[in-house]
Image (tube, rainbow, N blue to C red; front, side, top):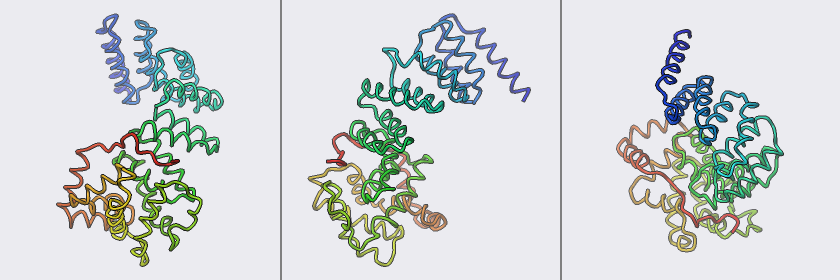
Length: 338
C-alpha cells in the first residue's frame, strides 16, 4: 500500500513539474488515468490544478463533477454541477452527470425539473429520455414508458431505452414488445451484463408468456396496434409447434417459420431491421447458431457448450460475423403506439 502511495505521489509531482501553464489537456489525460484506476483523490488534485489555468473549461468541470460522484462525495459533486447546468454550452453529458448527482442526494423535484430543461434543449437525445424515464419509474410513475418509447423513436441507435422498455413490457400483459425490444438490446449490447440478463428475459418471454394460451390472440381484442397484431397473427400460425413444450430447438423452428411467413405477408407494410437481420442469418446458415447464443446458454449452459463444440465451424462463423458488425436500428421503424 505504501509503495502505491509513493508511486502515485511521484507521478503527480512529475506531471506538475512537466506541465506547461496552458497544458490543460495533458493534465486532463492524467486525471482521467487516475479516475480509471480508481485513484479519485489524485484525479481531483490534478483537475483542480488544470482549472487554475482554465477555470471556465466545461470538460474539466464535467470530469471534476464525475470524479466527486464516483468518489461518492455527492455534496461536492453537486457544488460543481450546479455551476454548469445553466451554462449555454452545457451538453448532454452535463445533464447526465447532474441527473446522477441529483438522484444520489435524492433531489427528486430538482432532478425532474432539470431533465425537462435538458430535453427541451436536446429533444432528440436518447440518453436523456432513458434517464428521465428511470427517474419517473423510480417514483412509480408509469409515464416512464412514454419517454422510453420517445427515445426509441427519436434516437433508435441508443440502447438504453430498448432495455428499459423491454423490462417494462415484460411485467405487463403485452406479449410483443418485450420480445422485440429485448432482442434488439441483446444485439446492441451482446457482451454486456445487461445483455446477458436480457437473454434470460427473452427466453422466459417465449417459454412463459407468448404461448401460454392456445389462442395467441386471446386478450388482444382491444389491441389497435397493427404491427403487434401482425406479429401475433404470424406467430399464431406456428403455435402447433409448441404443444409438446418449448426449448431452444423449438423456439428456433418457430422463429424460422415466423420469418418466412412474415416476409410473405407483412414485410412490405412493416419493414423492420431486426427481421431483416434474422432473414440474413437464415440465408447465411447462421440462424441456428444465433438462437443457440440467444437462448441455449440460458436454457442449459452445459448443453449449449456441448452444441458449440459439436458445431464448432458454424459457431465460429457466427461469432466472427457477430464481432464484425454493430447492430443499429434505423430511423423510421418505430411502430409501437402507431
